[in-house]
Amino acid sequence: MQEISVPAKVVSPSTMNTTDFVLRQAKLAANPALFSKRNADNVWVDISAKEFLADASAIAKGLIASGITVGDRVGIMARTRYEWSLVDFGIWFAGAVSVPIYETSSPSQVAWNLGDSAAVAVFAETGAHENIIRQAAHNENLTTLAHVWQLEGDGLDALREAGREVSDEALEAARSANGLDDVATIIYTSGTTGRPKGCMLTHSNFVELSENALAVLGDTVVPPGSQTIMFLPLAHVFARYISVLAVAGGAKVGHTPDIKHLLEDLQSFKPTFILAVPRVFEKVYNSASLKAEGEGKGKIFAAATKTAIDYSRATQEGGAGIVLKAKHALFDKLVYTKLRAAMGGNVRHAVSGGGPLGERLGHFFQGIGLQILEGYGLTETTAPITVNRPERIRIGTVGAPLPGNAVKIADDGEILAKGVCVMKGYFGRDDLTAETFVDGWFRTGDIGQLDDQGFLKITGRKKEIIVTSGGKNVVPALLEDQIRADAIVSQCVVIGEQRPFIAALVTLDEDALPQWGKAHGLAAGITVAKAAQDPIVLAAVQNAVNRANSTVSSAEAIKQFRIVDTDFTETSGHLTPSLKVKRAQVMKDFDSVVEEIYLSKKPG
Image (cartoon, rainbow, N blue to C red; front, side, top):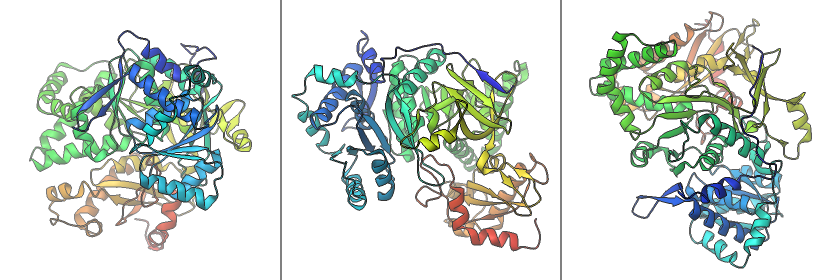
């Protein structure tokens, strides 16, 4: 199959915008809780639809009183927290356009987002964030920026007070000024290369994509009364879209800015569904595996893992036999229930995006009773183009198009997209917009294939395909994903462009090292730098490389690797905020390691 188009199940009125979701929930007799926020005693307190409507309206009135008009751009620079969503909807209620900024951004990055979008105001989480914004405004002479409000302290209260004299009629005029075709937000791509581009996402992108997703997921994954805890950055389109989807469906959202406390937060909030990037699921599995090894239960966990994977595969292929069912029931009591309890006990579905999950992990989590619905999309597509759904899932793929979306495979294998998910274009860059569309189809830059059932499989990134000096095309992700799944590995970058053989740079997982080291006989307190040269660690990484190599041809296999003694992180400048590797930066900073590999006399 080369093309599939799924008709929309819901067609929204042209006058509708994202704020209508809040109004819809507030009109319900049930007045559902849309958000939950920790109080001073660290207890979750629900915020009803009517309460949220009143507060978002108060923020909007404050914006109007401060001179914000329909279509103005307003930035948000903060960690994931309730107030992020509050001011986001407040901006929309005022008829304005929100511009997310990653809270880890440097002054130059902040200046680019605010300057390129010609933002007139910005919300900053803390004084530190405000200082970065003011430094950026000073350095780049951002003359349009008139206001900076803090989320902490009394910044929002002052805004609420400022809007007291704004009438309900003036608010409604601003709120209803935008329809489906109008821009709701400008999200700047985190960008692995070059300057970020401002993706103009419309109210239609959020409204019609949410409505059509609810048409197929609303009864199972996001029904009224369901709840999720948000820990991904709300500046990222994936988290942002799910937040809007939750409001549309009447689901409750809690927030936690610190992933280090994720397990405790999951246990206290007890979500029914979660969303995460693949690295989170890898960490959950690897932590459980290392814990079992440390308690002398490694063999039991390995057997439980195999059973979960076998059970999931058998179920997908038509049904498990009686022996496998019995083994699965036994391990459910011994292992799986404990894993589900560690995630709060109520999680039944997880949505995974931002990168490939891997078939093995998908089957493992499905087998323990946590169904991961892997999807695919980009900032330019408001997140999901395709997604697996409970009744129509094929693990190892990223699902079929959501209603209202279409996918086409170009002659060179590139994935093209069309439909309610696709952006209006790049802000102020008609030239780039024209380059990115061909006959109305958005060029994703990813390579993939559609099976005969319309399920999409991602096979690589067009710009990242490596061509060796011998002319062999190699898709690095096929190897990297498998190696990175190993408990001791943090990141892996496959290299070999115009080189005689394929090699890899590997980093170690500093968080996993102490427990892994104890289980494998390493010296207590060993540093990452020393571990990178330890024969036991080198042998373990070699085993991971061997397993990955077994899935590709000899010409594509990794012949050499080097463990570098520092990790690739967002702080180091080697990962984007959405945890994608900046390959060009890695190659630049570790060029001496790369050259050393290829100066060696033998490829393996």
